[in-house]
Length: 122
Image (tube, one colour):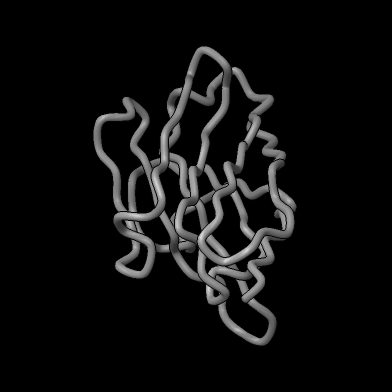
């Protein structure tokens, strides 16, 4: 029902910013909660941020709260992750996900993109 493609990753210096985009192909995009997760080498995929289908409720991991902002534009079938004040520990592959409800758990998301690499240098 939903195909997700992430863009916007790259190499940035510590303290810099990136904006990730996740474009969805499904016409039912607006019915899904959307989440961002990340996975560093040798580590489990972890929650970063999520937004409900209306866009009025957001969740953030403690490690990114105050630095990252998730938003969505249902008219464009796109969810964004604005990342500011980036730290080397933010380095990971970032994945966009769609699910039936707003949760912190990766197990609750049904559709996943292929990921985009974010590398933050010291």
